[in-house]
Image 1 (cartoon, one colour):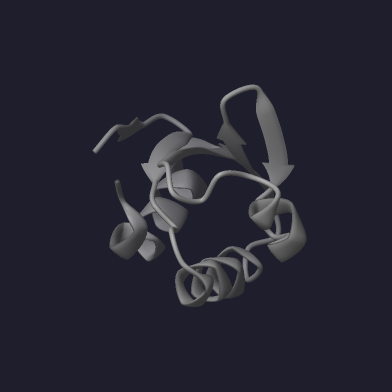
Image 2: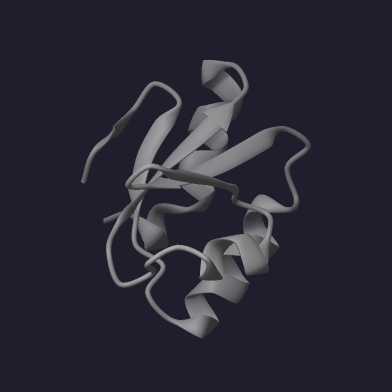
Length: 81
């Protein structure tokens, strides 16, 4: 599992996981992105996530300070790749 700073590698490889992931990240008021290859999408967007290859792990980027990023990463431990 790669994580640290404001990044974390996540695996959200089915519809249920995508819904749960978006439900959790939508609770936070900062911007959170997912990167897969050369494509970056809003992690709070179900449609955006489905535009990515969900069968591969993705890098999550949290646009907030380290303390808030740690809280978000802890909330998403179940999705760690």
